[in-house]
Amino acid sequence: MLSEEQLIADYFKPLDNIHGITPASLAIGDDAALLDIPVGKQLVISTDNLVAGVHFPENITAFDLGKRSLAINLSDLAAMGAQAAWFTLNLTMPDSNTQWLADFSKGLAALAKEFKCQLIGGNTSRGPLNIAISVYGLVPHGQAIRRDNAQIGDAIYVTGKLGNAAAGLQCLQQGIDTYPGLIQQFVNPVPRINCGLALSKVASSMLDISDGLDTDLTRLINASNVGAQLYLDKLPLDDALIDYCGLEQALQAALTGGDDYELCFTVPVHNIEILASKAAQIDVGYTCIGKITSGDTIDYMHNNIKIDMHLNKSFQHFN
Ligand code: ADP
Ligand code: MG
Image (cartoon, rainbow, N blue to C red; front, side, top):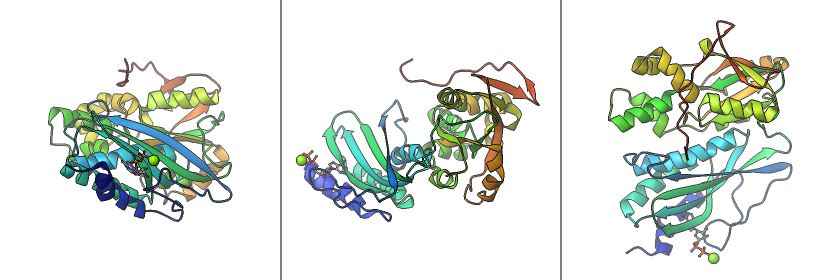
């Protein structure tokens, strides 16, 4: 039987060697970690946990689970326009299965390396599988991109494509293997850290789309005290998604599906040229999908005409 100390030493301590330009003064091994916040920066903190069966299907591999756990947390840093720096891992698991731990920690390490994020501590206990991660990022003082600053007239954009992850989850649950690309979008979301950084001083507001565009854009307009027009005919939909479920369902997936982890952001008209100059950094592409209005709801538009849109509400916890 692996002792808790040995388990941490074997599988998690190596991840405190992975870091970017701001390694912790003290990482795994003491009672707590020590961080130096560089002068002129603000610390950006977010946390999320994943419960087996609720936040991911049981048939996802341990390696993918490791990647996904960190990815969905880093997505929140991306949505603030922050650079990732550190993370902690609070792991509850039913037993110390060494193969599972090896695969899970490799998945975590892969993403930590890609985004230069150092594991600085955590906690390990026994119980039903639950993965709680906190991420710590840095942003130049005063430059975080919040969700409460969209202004009337701003253009609304999203990165990448919408709706794929929800369709991918359905494929995974139903054992459909003809759309591996959709499944990948659910299993391995890529946090849009680089896009978020590119949008510093360009976007007026931003959030990540974890619960579907309709729900998340509503959060953004409510926080900003504005309304929005959403151009349904402009939503970026993958051919594979349309092929999988048809245009009507693809639209529903884009609006209510969830798990996309793309960024939704607003740009003042006078910054649209600057946005174009950042296109290379926003390498997953971005699409203008609407504009901010003086209302307080989302108006659904099709070819510039307001239409009634009946949404199948996305999966929500505790409903
Ligand atoms: P304590 O008993 O003081 O809570 P632990 O024995 O739980 O300390 O942890 C020892 C060290 O290992 C601490 O630095 C802690 O942050 C780290 N640690 C524990 N579990 C994990 C984990 N799952 N991932 C990363 N670091 C961990
Ligand atoms: Mg202690």
